[in-house]
Image (cartoon, rainbow, N blue to C red; front, top):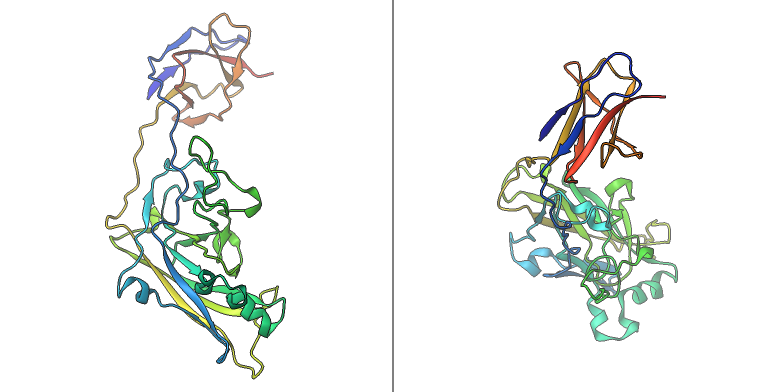
Length: 317
């Protein structure tokens, strides 16, 4: 980081610039970001309904993956995903989309056997299946993800350059199951849904750390209130999902900032810092950063993005 010092005198309205910043900066190519996570590889934990016993059931994770075998969270550093995109919330986390809710009867293609049809036939047309996260490991977050890329129900919705087309109506990557102030309850749509589960890298303190969530799966009305069976019993069941952190723990990431530090005596707080592309320019732009005062010196960090830049101090109006 280069430090530039501006001198001041007591009276002038304009501080003489004499600062041409020949930074010799290397300009890199535009930042390249990864596409959002897909649901591959996937493990579907099927949701079933016994119409005789009036009981829901979720296939145990160990039955699908094996005892003590868990989806491993994938680490995403701060610059992995475009922060302007919905999936940018995964920067600085380890995530997984492997586990998903599914109705095994969908593959048969007979709508009369779909689980939501069975539910409405017994509990009424407004009834549905709700999933309530009753507990979760500290740091475990969940985000709504729909379709292969999580942001469009159409799995091949991509542009010619391979970028993903976002369906804004889905509100993808909004928090669910208590994440970001959301309700702990989520109404399942009966489809194959692989939401995204993530843990901040700072919350992963040991290798292969386990994170779990316990879910109550039940029949409910449109508001999420449980609908009981005619005899007063509950059709609900409980499912526990577990994820495994990366094999390597994470330490805070150090970065070397490509910045220029511009400083001047801290006594001159009534001056503002401006920049232009040439010393004789008639157009000067205010540096939109609040100076930090350190040891009696005002200091501002500015991007070193141009090959040269001129700075000046101007007495504020």
